[in-house]
Image (cartoon, rainbow, N blue to C red; front, side, top):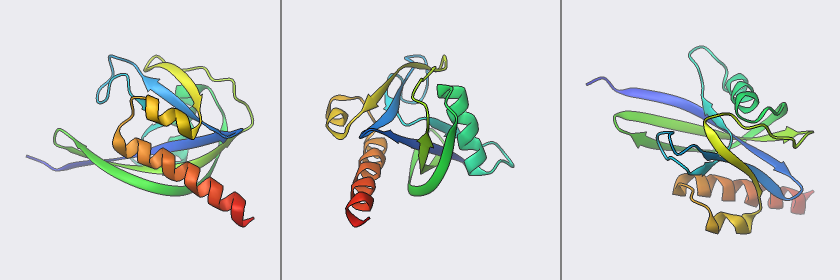
Length: 140
């Protein structure tokens, strides 16, 4: 059986102490009805940052500036190995228009994470994003 590996990117879009999360449609696999950071798969030949801009626009209608990557995680779904790179992103607007692959969006603070259905790896990535933002503001 061939080994397949796919790369994805996720956006930590931070505004007023909250991060933008999207809830996947109940029809989406993997992880139906789970919350996640906006993002998706990088297409063949596409730069990760360009793929992220494309996915954010498709999923949220937002135009953002892509900042620095701050973390990674990987997981298996069947025989496919997925690697995800998380980036800080900056949006001047917060008017979200979600795509059909999502059911709702939420601007969440750190405390909200405990009550949301999120994979452990995504939760850790979001918590890491909040932690590094706090560290940056303390040091600046």
